[in-house]
Image 1: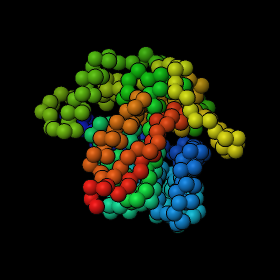
Image 2: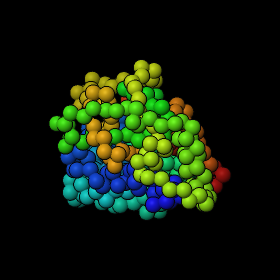
Image 3: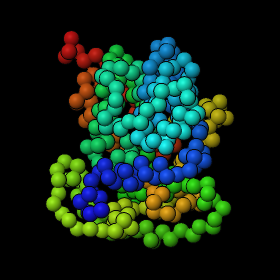
Length: 321
């Protein structure tokens, strides 16, 4: 694979997101089965406002949210065929399709609610993240349809990121019995080199480059991304959970993530790409996406245990009346 091909955003996502999920074992993929309380509340509101509301779970993974509310009709989709297979086995009566967030196979103005939980941070460029949000907004109904987005935050309590674009090792149950020693320096790279390559990736997203330089896969990993390096205590405050939620939801290391007290699989092939969002970045991205989708506006944004989150509502655009 030459350098030009590897710099293509869709190729990077195939290698560092889709192939990783398709390669992991089912035990690892299903270990995080606890629903975020605020996602549960969002779905409860949707059910109370519209009986038998139609919900799209974009990037449904193994189906954690598709059956939270029995009075909602939910359709799941994911780019990973492995995740879709697991979800179908668990919920054989629920429609789950393989689909790309950038080209959702649904008509306009269809769903009462849309979920995008931990999805757009896996997209490698600004334009692709923008397109993903526009697609989620496009399929929302007018007159109150709502989209809930969760993305990883750069401001986290458990860890500090050295860059917004990082590769995160997966926790794998098969490696937990092995004593793994981390060589953090082996994951370090020149920020100057990293910024140049990431800039080149962004350029490829809008135009074709002519460079033919070749790099090995390991060199690409070391040069394109920086790994998480150390914990930090400088984080925004999270909305407090009710006592009932606390009983259901145990705050834990992020699913298949890398905390300092976790053993991880250091195989470079099991690292996933994340673009971690800075405070205010998600809102700006949504506002930019809303320019192409009539009637979309942010009604709430908040920080939730290492995630920046937003609820976007689509109302009738008075300009169309």
